[in-house]
Image (tube, rainbow, N blue to C red; front, side, top):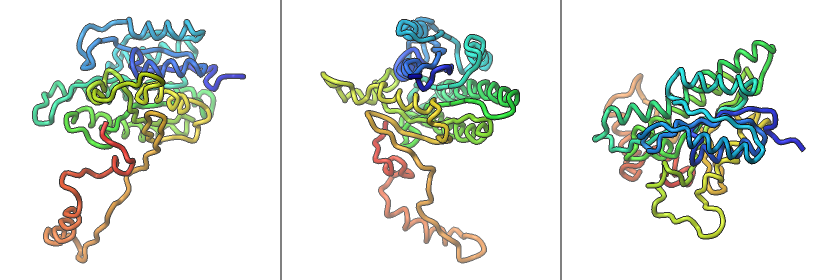
Length: 312
């Protein structure tokens, strides 16, 4: 019996640890040849010396299990290095079929205390890093589609966060980057659909180096799989990368602990029409102030409440 990703090749960024590692292992288990990308800096804030160790260890683990894998230690937020990463997959495996963008860092700070560099660095790694790899993968698929005169196989899975959905007071840079990734994903999905390519985003909740503070008070169970283990997220990535997900495009899915929630696009919660040619201040005051007076102070637009999710 053939595996669902047999004969396909994949790139997973930020795959040396945590979620990326679990995703790379899952894609390999499902039959894909994998380029394991990780810059290898030890600090979750992107600090420390770059190191090939994490990427090479995961690639070696895949090969030891009988799969195909290569390590790449470049910085995906660097345009030429992202080009080289995509080129490596094409050169070594003949083509690229799957791109999983996961690389990221944290520089947490309240918005009134955040330094410019703390903002720029997080936007650079998360949002620009997602764009860079997507840009070169998309060009590859477009060229292949033109060469064959029709659709080709292409899958993009991007990593957003519930910090974008529910807000995260100490992470304005991270929340903004993750919201931007959703916009990038939906735009990419529309642009590449005619070439046979899908693009989707996930909001994973998992216990990793990036979330050690968030889940500090939740102990891991002594027996069985941790509900917050990255292994709960990886199967969804495998599914979105597979042929069976061909009709799933431009979607946002929240995933954790054996649960997947499909997120709808924002819906209109209330609508007000002016009785005149244009609204006046007084009319808006009479309509909107009572509407918001009925809501708890400080409440945001409510995406998390609709999903029944807590901040994470």
